[in-house]
Image (cartoon, rainbow, N blue to C red; front, side):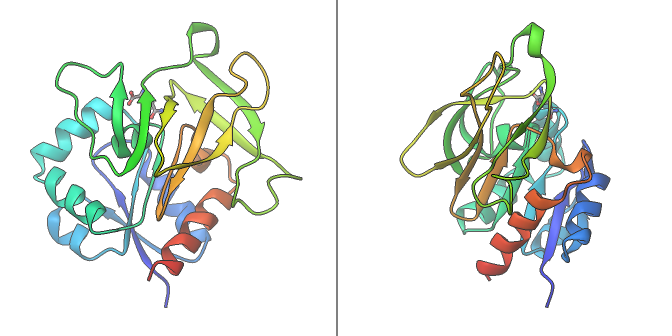
Length: 203
Ligand code: GLN
């Protein structure tokens, strides 16, 4: 049976994730309330604005329930703002900004300096089918990077060229995957394919 994957639908690019997940054979649904969260096998936290999503998670009484599901081992995928929300530690957040946590990393918010604030580049991601030969086109929009990786997490992708070469932009910890970039805007659904695989394997 296809897994049911929720996309946190408080703010951000929800529709694009739903389309990419369905393209990869999952059932995808928006999650805005507790009952919807309870019904999904896994959750995507989309890009958008992490400070806003943090506030809305609290306003919708979803912060703790999502955090609890993550602690219980729910697979999750976060892109950009979603990566910030799934990181255990954050640098450059606003006063009082919290994260759900789940991945043993420190992210730096809005990390890429002025010149490369938003940019696109090609990179290989460990676990993403064929990406060594045919790289993933990664779109970064005021993105975070991963400044520090703890022992529980594994780096699966780095920027390969240009001024930000070497920066860590994709990490996996068990069933949780995070990327600084937005694979949902390119039409290449291989990152979502990897996540759907992770969800299937964890069931
Ligand atoms: N800069 C945003 C933040 O801090 C993230 C941008 C994005 O998700 N495209 O949440």
